[in-house]
Amino acid sequence: LPGRVHFTTTLGLICIIVMIPLLVVAFFLVQRQNADLDFTLTEAQGLTMLRPTMKVVTLVQKHRGQTNVLLSGNAAVKADLDKTRQDLAAAITDTQAALKATDLPNVAPLWADMLQRLNALPAATQQAAAPASFALHTDLVRDLRHFVYSVGEFSGLLYEPQASAYLLMDAVVSRTVPLSELMGQLRGAGAGVLANAQASPEAFAAMRVRLSHLNSDLKDWQFLLDVLKRNDEVKFGGEAVFEAASHFMRLGNLAFAAAEQSKPTDAAKLPAVGKSTSPAKPDNAGKPDSAAFFAAGTQAIDAVVAAQNQMADRLQVRLNERISSLHRERTLVVGGIVLVAAFLLYVMFSFYKSFRIDLGRLS
Image (spheres, rainbow, N blue to C red):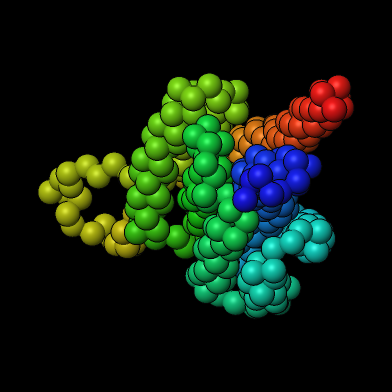
C-alpha cells in the first residue's frame, strides 16, 4: 500500500499523525487553563459581593444595639439610630448593585429574602419590647452570616485551592463575622443593661458570661493570626483588634463586676425601722455609662472590620495575581503550540522540497 500511495499523500499523512496528538494535548491544556481562570474570576466576583454585605452585617449589629438602648429607656440615642438607618439603607443599595454586577444566579433568591427582612427591620422593631427586638436582630444577623457563607460557596471561595489564599478566605468568610457578632451582642445587650435603671443582678451576671465568651474567642483570633503569620500573611491590624477589645473588656469588667457580698452582722440581720429590705443593686459609682460602653464596643468592632477589610484586600491581590498568571500561562501554551506546529510544518515542507529537488536531479 505505501508503494501505491503518492509521496505527497504519504508525507501529509505523517504530518497529520504527528499533529493530531499535539492538537489534542493543546486542547486539553487550554481547556484546563480556561476552567482555572473561570473559577478564579468567579471567586473574585464573590469577594466583590461580600464587601458591601459585610457592611450590612455590621450596621444591623449597630442598629440592634442602638434600638436596644432606646427601648431600655435612653432616648438620647435616637439621633444616632436614625443615622445608622440611613447608613444601612445605603449599604443595602451598594449590595444590590454588587449583586447585579456579578454572575452568581444562586445568590439572588437568597438576597431577595434578606432584602425583604432588612427593609422591614425599622418598622418591626420600633414598637417592640427590648428583648423581642434584640432577638429579631440577632436572628437576622445569623441569617446574614449564612448568606455570607452561601456567597462563599456559590462563588467557589470556600474551595480555594491555594493554602495562603484559603486561610485569608477562611478568615474573611468564616472567622471575623462570628467575632464581631459576639462583640455586637455584648455591646448591644450591655449598653441596654446600663441604660435600664431597673436592671437586675442576673442581667449583670449574663454580661459577665458574655465577657468570658469574648475572651475565649479572642484567643482563637490570636491563633488565626499566628497561622497566617506562619504563611507569610501579616500586617492585618491584629494588634489594633486586641487593643480595642482589651479596652472594651476592661470597661465591661468594670461595668458588670459582681457586687461584693460581706457577711451580715447580727445587727444587720434585723431590718432597720423605716429602711427598705429589698436586695442591693450593683453600685454604679465610677462605672462607665451606656454611651461609653457602646462606644468602646463600636471601636472594637470597627477594628475587627478593618482587619477583615485588609484580609479581603490581600485575598483580592492573591486572586488578581493568579488571574494574571493564568492569562500568561494560557498565552504561552497557545503560542507554544502554534510555534511547535509551525516548526513541524516547516520541517515537513523542507523535507518534501528537498526530496523533490533530489528526485529531479536523479531523473
